[in-house]
Image 1: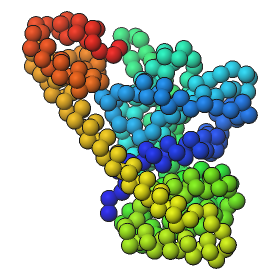
Image 2 (image 1 turned 60 degrees about the vertical axis):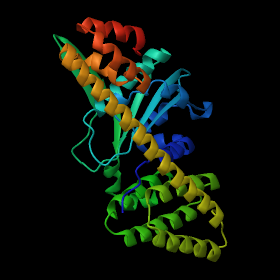
Image 3 (image 1 turned 60 degrees about the horizontal axis):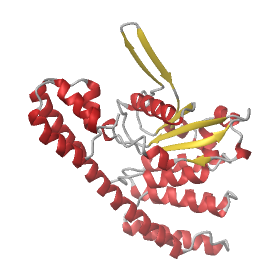
Image 4 (image 1 turned 135 degrees about the vertical axis):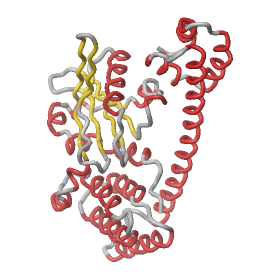
Length: 330
């Protein structure tokens, strides 16, 4: 059975619900410097204006959060959560690009964090470095590797921070990729522990939704899981989640998977069209500079179509640069 194709929704939701707990669990030193009593603000719409860039590769989740430090200053914090099962060569450069875009747009300092959810123990990007003709640029950023936490399951099971449940769900999904009956047992065990930990109802519902989304089961095992959950809640005289609520979550999950597939198809169409235009430009003008190619690849479908027509009149690379100066995003 294929794993869920899109982890965006559960990660976004759980970060919205448990952002403070997320920072405390993975980045405790940074958490200690933030004044949580002053509150915080998610700036997702503002972030979308910065991270529109299809050419930089797909991110699973990006969060931009405005917080206050304990010394009274405001600080922009970009929390970049990338949920993928293999290393991404451009990860460090992408972290750098978004970092300087945020700093430039908001004229504010920015702290950048990454979650590495792949299975490669040797892939541990922590800096972006570039050097040219004596000019050197280095950006270091903080990351957390989920498999490092999975190694001590007993500690996770006794951890009070509810984000430990997220790591346990992720670990259980990977460990049972080829044994769905074992996944059923782990999913129910995790759900039962969720009910027993004394979390608030909002935390239980949010964590349940994450567990249910990532620990996907085929229909017949999902039915058995639901029966176990109903029986457990009835036996212990609790009803954190009714059957109706769980069915609503299931409909939302299916809708989210479908939406993710549609977005993936649209992104694939855009990426393919951009690659075609880049090849056409290279045939006419020769190899493009890295910056010119980047600016072409982030164009919309409409602008790519316009460029495909206009490039027939280009005679030299300067023609492309003038076109980009007029129509493209800097």
